[in-house]
Image (cartoon, rainbow, N blue to C red):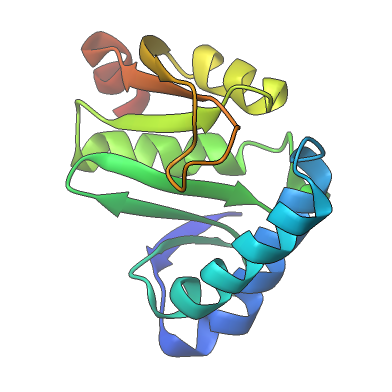
Length: 153
């Protein structure tokens, strides 16, 4: 059974492991240099960020989400539990808090794009570069309101 709770400082190492494993499994389009540079940025920020964690029955974090004023800045799932509904549970939690939830996803991450579409997100824009100016296009998404409301049930 999955429970969602806020992160605490003791979760920092596990969150980084989830991020690294998830990125290695899904972001094969990153150059090795960019992967290392992004890792350095994330390592300094993520352990201290106010995250929502999906934890299993032993309280082990298996996924996390970062929300910022209705925008999902990050959603990463441990590859060992992908396809088990953990990411969907976090999106439902986020949409309960913010019915007009938005997010951005790397266009090259086709699995994630498909996941968000299945969750009811629709494309509202696109950027040719990522947030750091790297050549990894972003798709800007918004959750359809009716989908957000049905996801809460």
